[in-house]
Image (cartoon, rainbow, N blue to C red; front, side, top):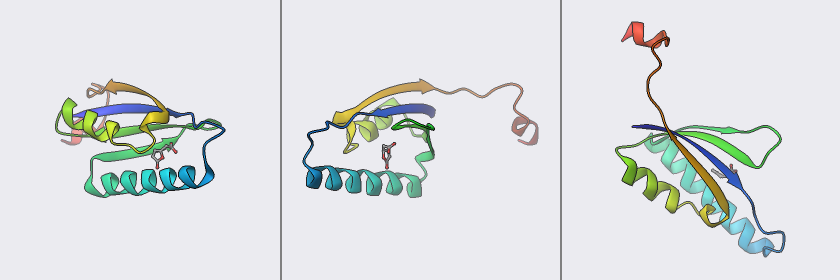
Length: 96
Ligand SMILES: O=C(O)C[C@H]1C=CC(=O)O1
């Protein structure tokens, strides 16, 4: 199942620099492992914002929830999930 997920990050200005660096390092490692595993298919920076637009390919809603809930930055994020369906004009469908 494909989902588009927009993540807006809002870190507290008073956050301890060491905690911040550790959280960002864990977030990066977690994200890159899921990308290697094929569940986190795309990650794009939204230009000019501390936000990303990502595409996930996961087994079901529960798996997506588990992935998002375990993001180290989850407590500092506003997350918006949109389920995706194929578009009838997509020329990739002609090749399938
Ligand atoms: O920077 C972000 O957009 C937040 C987050 C999502 C993956 C990652 O490595 O950082």
